[in-house]
Length: 190
View 1: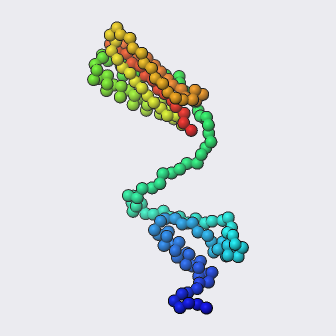
View 2: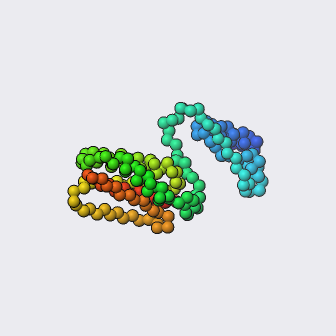
View 3: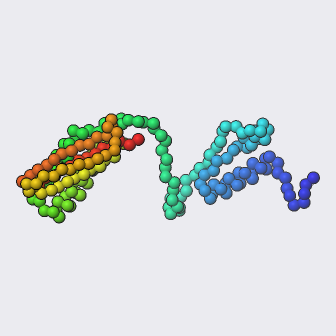
């Protein structure tokens, strides 16, 4: 018996209704996963679904939904525990020597000039080290510039790192008016 105002659908009609709902959902969202009608019949017949699932996706016109934030892309785990390419300490020492010598060879110590030079030199060094394309290393550059005036100074730093993979490169420069110490820390991350 059918109650008045209700309708019963056959299995074929249900798959058509599901396809219509999926099409409407696809227009709203952009992708949908659905079971095929064969899987629906298999579920109804055997009480469980098969392992196959189909996914339908589309690409929207560019510029229509630029204001909607997209989720961040998640990468698969590589389970790589060590670097494929070691950090080249000697090459980075040569970069430090070259940059410090070229920027500071003829300079006289002036506090404001040296403050700007530390920023400039650190950016140049970081860019040159990144050009080496050493994968999976974070690069930290510290530059100290001071006046030579018969004083002593000690510079210390502490880092928590893995001594098997993490390393650093350092170079000290001195002319008649100033000194500079450059440190590049290379910290491997998984």
